[in-house]
Image (cartoon, rainbow, N blue to C red; front, side):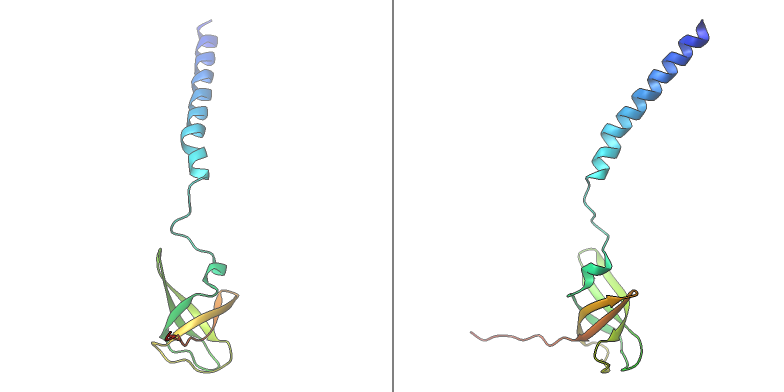
Length: 111
């Protein structure tokens, strides 16, 4: 008789614990915003800075600054022109985790 009472109370407590965990922890976490993550597609169109010069036929490294910090990624020149260190670049596309970039010339308009 006592064993069945203990089993029923244990089952009810387990059900209550799982329900409360689901309501107060798991459901709010599923609707939380992603704050420190990025997708590679999000980098397309961004402006960065070359930290290791990019040769015409090889790889270099670029630094992209953002709200979640700095991101350093491997990069190649889109049009096979060398890009010097400290140059600004524009990310055109991403293939196999490598950024394809072109030099970025910021233009200022005098109106």
